[in-house]
Length: 133
Image 1 (tube, helix red, strand yellow):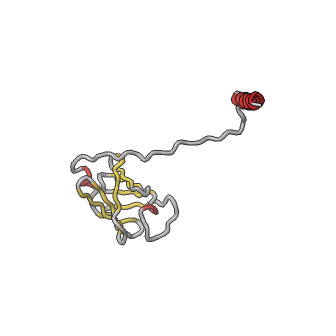
Image 2 (cartoon, rainbow, N blue to C red; image 1 turned 45 degrees about the vertical axis):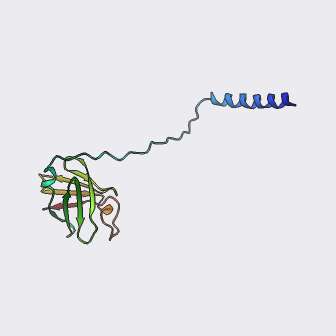
Image 3 (tube, helix red, strand yellow; image 1 turned 135 degrees about the horizontal axis):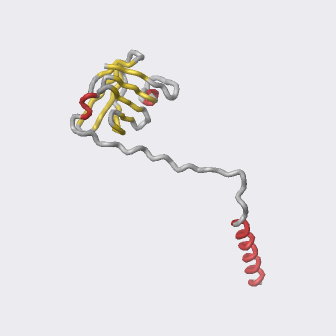
């Protein structure tokens, strides 16, 4: 009896091994690795100074940028303050995925994924807001 069970087990394992060497099928599934959040960079002392100001947005709102120690913040009128993570010179993101890009020594500002910065209004995904001092 033990021999019959052992033989059946060996036969089942042998069939499974044959399937391991079969030709690949045309239909396949790709699984992408999860993306890691980009690493935050450190700003040199005084580097944020050219961005620390209030900006008039193209929708009539104002946004203010401030610094406390080595932490950076953005605050829209009527909204809670949001921490900014430096990603590249003049580029910051929020944990929620809004992206601020400063140009012309901080005179111009583009906010991408603006809807992720605003909590009081529903906006379409990928909203871009332009601003100037």
